[in-house]
Picture 1 (cartoon, rainbow, N blue to C red):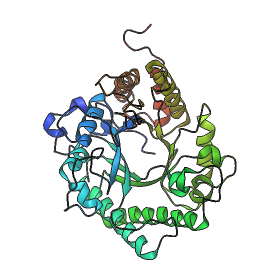
Picture 2: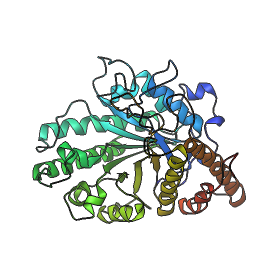
Picture 3: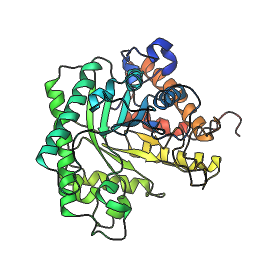
Picture 4: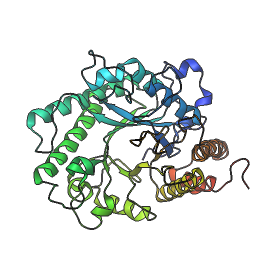
Length: 393
């Protein structure tokens, strides 16, 4: 994968660089520290910034160099990236240039994992019509060209993908029967992913760029069901899709995460030019309605360890601010920072991890005159999760 990247973190950048000027990331700062989080549909906020800017800045301040958020036509509203729709935004490229989105894309993150949903095409669940395929292609191609051109020389890497694909394929969240997974939907999704891949590949061919990358990914989420031989994105779509990477939204994995990752990898066709593991954890999390903060932290550490040991390019916690609220208004607790602004134990685990990881990479580079490989880093990084935080015994 992207292998080796960031080193010194957000504190190495001035406020002006964070808030509007794209800084070229030095090589050591492009190192992939694997662990990260995301901001989608946050249920609360604490500043007068847009939710996207506030949460992205908070993730940067935590020490992360990877950011996941949504880029699509549902970008606005009470839970949106910005509060109101802008009638001048008619496509993904327009949205990428909207002030809040541009401000966040200009921040010194090395990696962006994006849910990308174009504005213009129809959906593919009854088959992906040729006219809609062309619309999908054009929007994805154009925004990929925009990212390559705008951030050429920056050292940034963009992953363009989507939310849990098995729920796209399996309408109505029905897992009792496979009859809801129609041949038309399976073929439509295959066409959808391959059109998006062609758009990304063509954008890289068509756009002069350097020190910037764009990849296409698919997300799966019903992997345990797939391992039973049932219809799923993993079994029926992925082997016929030419995607660069696969994200696993891993709530169904239980304690045996590595076997699920192995299974996904076994269905992923090889891709010349891409080395290393190509399956990452796009979501995991343990809400406090079912866990104490300490349990939330410990269970998260278990996932982090497994992902690092297996070789995942990313292990992304859901999420910075909680997005799920019960009908009675109770926060379900998918958070690193709660609705009172309190940083949870799992936040502190991430923060301490980044501090130790950066020191390790900086020391390694000074000693060896090179950056560690992803494998060398992961072998040491798992030990950072075993260390007690300040105040613990």
